Image (cartoon, rainbow, N blue to C red; front, side, top):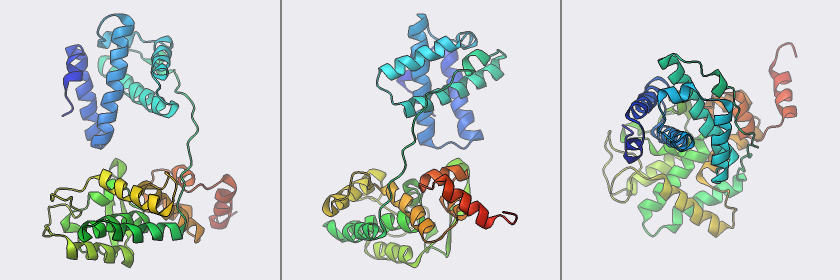
Length: 312
């Protein structure tokens, strides 16, 4: 599943426990492949550190004896290697989850290690594009590539990000069976959460333009958006198309494919959409995430609450 040369450097008992924990995260919490790979890297860094720190490969008994001092030493070592506060916070979170799972599985008290806290960091606010900038990006993308079908393909993907608020992985995960798009598209996002996303005519038309020019036949189980060789389209190619568009238009480096999803949310809010609806359309688990995502301040959030609550 997630094995590799790195796991061979661990004690067999620990490598087995790590594999079992990753499998449980994938199955019970429906983690994506990307998240599982990140967790594996986080735990390999932690367990490798413990082996060096204690002079012997980490074992379940090693975790049972962990203290806050050990956790602080690991955090200091990671920061010393240049890891950002945000990445370190995620790494420590994964590490604590693994320690908690191990303590339940092997019956030891992990309270001393779990009492350690991750570093504080300032969450950067997204920078959405203005509506006219987003429209310019779609027009430029749809006309710059020398192969017309690829140009229309890239424009169709970016239209889904801006017009429907999809994540790039969600757009590229569509298959031929999803076409033709109905009035609402069922999307299975992070954590396995399903949501219904309205499909604007402009998005449907953009995909229809792409399919008319695509040299590969539409097949139910094949990717809707194909690469040059017919396989599933890579996110890096869409990022490259966006990079070319922003260079032509003089947009900042923050104008990425994901910024179009930010723009979808922000433009809806500006037009009078309420946060709860936008939360559902984006597939966020909490309203606070949507609040940060759209750059909404507490005053605006309170105004929305007062307008919606029957006793406000």
